Image (cartoon, rainbow, N blue to C red):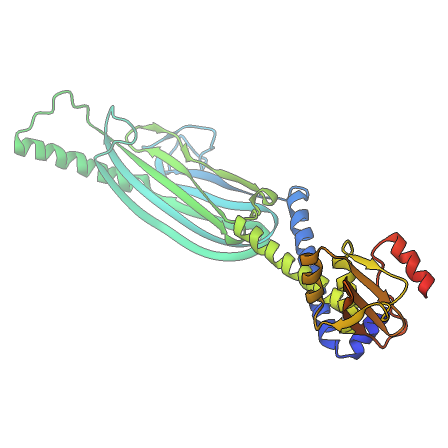
Length: 375
């Protein structure tokens, strides 16, 4: 604690600021890692949506003596010769697991087709498409409803088109002298389709449903045949769709953690270090060369050895290595003395210090005992 205070007094405010910055940086990274880990193991978060079309119809007959009720009860089949007009209702609603920003489009399409009899439903020789209505909009809700829309259709208008087509086709065959072997004639149908599309960009929802009726125009007795799909179901697990961590993200995160941890520990070490550079140097020497240095309880006897001072401790290292000598160490209240004895000479490196409380670390248990005796 004393070293912390001394270092701060000696201009260590900058290191304190750096220490705080790296500590905050490391804390933020830890919080991010915890949040990410939690997001990978939280309970499933299901987002769902469903939508449904509801269709209805009413058939109104021409005024007659047999069928007094108008519209005709829907449980009956219907006769084209009596039909005056048909009303078709459409309604759409959707439910969402939570409130969402919803974008919708709607389109009603009327399609008149003529096909050769005996051919597949998707084969036709004439097609006329009319868009009756279309709209779009947006809403923020969890329960979405569009009001009921009603469309009136007169089948007789299309039967007249069919008759015109058949007559003109027969005229064309006669004019071109074409023989149609096995030809069974044509049939005509009217298809009414309602298409609703729901989009929620936030959750990547893009669902549509197309539903309608198909009416035969070339049969006396007819009914309403449903086409398309009246509803949709959608759901997703946001935990599954959450973005996974990539290798570049892992590398970047590891680098940031290393920088923050290194900066924190380095500045912490600098603040905890002895503010006296000479004392730090003594500590470093005794720790680094603990196996090569012998700590003595008495200084060099100058009556037996002539002192020769070297400028750097590394010079003693060179001498000790080249001559296979040990380095001796002695300390008192004012200095630490390192020496290598070579014959009548004692090569010394002396470090003086002002702090009376400074005690260099012992290089071994015996050294520690020896130093206590000296003190």
